Image (cartoon, rainbow, N blue to C red; front, top):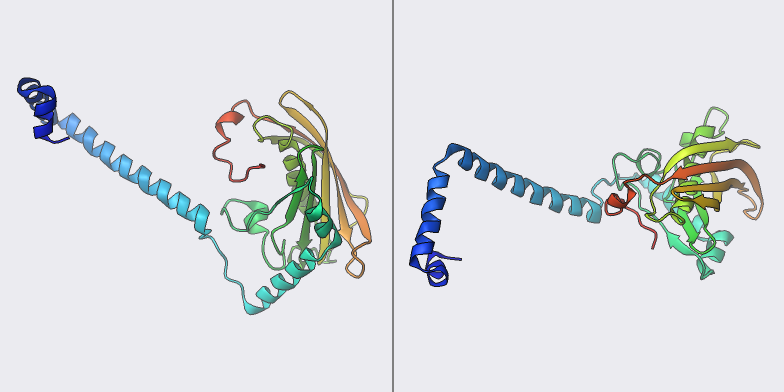
Length: 256
């Protein structure tokens, strides 16, 4: 609103009093600093918001693969898409599919540090049923995360099971957010690298902000994927924080 329009709206005397008062206030050094700080803060906030959106939309934390690594990724991705369980779950109308691209955050363990060729080779495919509270995750584990005998450390299996059990708990809690309160894991047999794994979980009970889930992990046979071996059995207790409703808008993944 310009001065002329202000005069038309408020009249000459009120408008004159308004602008003269503003000029007197601006002569105060503290007022000048406040205006400058407010302008700088607003500019930085706007720039940060725009940059954050750019990061989430363009995934600028990408990693360049070598020709050999690209070949490995494409081969594993093709085998993953042709697994019978992936095709069956994709055709089942009760299940919804979720797949989170790698490198969405520099501070993620399984989605950044442990992702890529030789590790968790391609983004796992996740299917979930909101009515029955069931979750399936299909992933491939490469050779670079293995021990000397090509076995996988139980800690990696526990981390992956924790995430799958957590997704299952999200389906039953009001704000779809929870933290691990307790995780129990047993390993009936060893897990090996360069295999596909099927991680399954289902809800056992909920009470208030608590959810108890149960899950298993199976290693698929490379020669005959219809054969599998149970490598982990897990039980997890998850609790929704009291302030969870304030976090709904900052969680990068939602379950529609």
